[in-house]
Structures are given as C-alpha cells and as structure tokens.
Image (cartoon, rainbow, N blue to C red; front, side, top):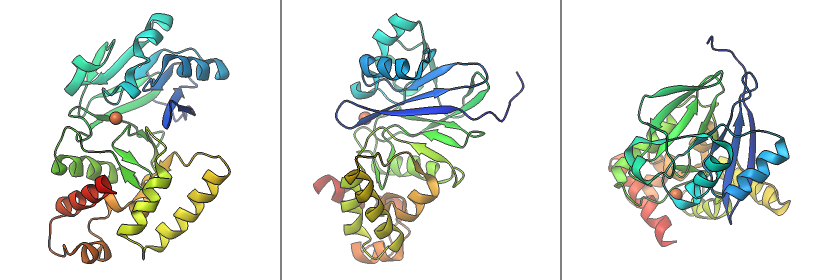
Length: 260
Ligand SMILES: [Fe+2]
C-alpha cells in the first residue's frame, strides 16, 4: 500500500480517576486503534460516541489501568492486540509483540515502535512520524514523567532522551492527567523558567474551566519539563550538581518528586 499523507482522527477521553483513553482512526481504511484500554466500558462508550468500530488495541505497558479492558474488548470486537515484546506475557490477549525499531501499518498510517523502559521493563511508545504524533503511555507526562518502577534511573533517562529527539512539532499523548501536580513540582526545580511560569498559568486556567491539558508537544516539554532539562544551568546550580552527568541530575529530580 502506498503511504499517504492522511492524518489520523484522534479522540481522547478521560477514564478511571485520572487516566486518558485515546482512539485513533485511519480515515483511509477506517481502522480504529485504542491506545491502551483502561476499562472496556469506557473505551466502548467512546467508540459508540464516535460511531467507530474497534480493530486494534496498541498497549504501551502491562499495568492494569492500561490493559484491564483488553479481553472484554477483544471478545466484543475481535480486535488485534499489539503490545510490548519486553512484557508480552503480562499483556492480556496479546496477538503481536513489538519492540525497538519495529514498524507496522494501521491502514495508511505508519507506526514505529520505540522502547522506552523505566516505568516498566518493557514499556514502549508508538510514534506515527508522518502524522507527527506519539503515544507515550506512562513514560512522559506534561511537565513530568512516569515513576521508575522496574528500570533504573539511567534507563529511564535514556528513554526520555529518546523522546526528546523526536521532531519538536510532535504531539504527545500521555496516560494520565497529572499536569497540575507536575506543574507545582516543576516550579520548585526551575522557578526562574519564564516559559514554565507561563505554562503553569495556562494550565491552571484550563483546569479551572474543566478542560484537559493534554496532549502536549515535544518542544513545549523541552522548554518546561524539568525532567527533560537536566542540562539547565539554573537547575544544576539549585541542586548543587554542576558537573554531574545528565542522568544523575534527572535521577535527583525524580527522587525529589517521589518525596514531594
Ligand atoms: Fe503505568
């Protein structure tokens, strides 16, 4: 099939307490993927609201708040479940395991797989280069990043660094609405960052209106997310880590966030 420049139709919706579900539809083929499936009921309701028929689930990682809907949705729709090679045995209903460098088509949409371990051992990010969109699960959040549960800090830093190398215009969908808490913490790490200050004001206004703060964009995160800014002289000075390698500065920020 010839690649086209068609853009996916994307529908993001809240799930559970603070998760997001995302549906992606290829307008050329009509194929529809759910990025993770927090609950079958909420994903099914979102599909019904759009009038879309589920054909795929793309799992980012094994956690229940991303996979609990898999089996019921598969039973109801016969969808194909694609998930991370590194933890395939823990993804309910998985049909196809994928890892770093793998590429597949969702109809006319090219999807590339990036391994982004740290939050879990096998965590992956799905990137659609032509559509300039990535689905980062619990690796990257707006002004934050996932907790490092299974990997080590160096591994998580490498995963985040990989995401920072995506084109700056890449739109990033994330697994959770943690933005306000992340914003508050970010200001303790780099209070002099004017882009961060402006973003925090914007996020507060959005939440006050009951709006979502996601998706985000790589260039916005590069400018405001302290976890992606261990090279910042102001951050290094504040942490007393002027000559440490980036991953150690990242690790210190992550540990402070864990304690906050
Ligand atoms: Fe998770």
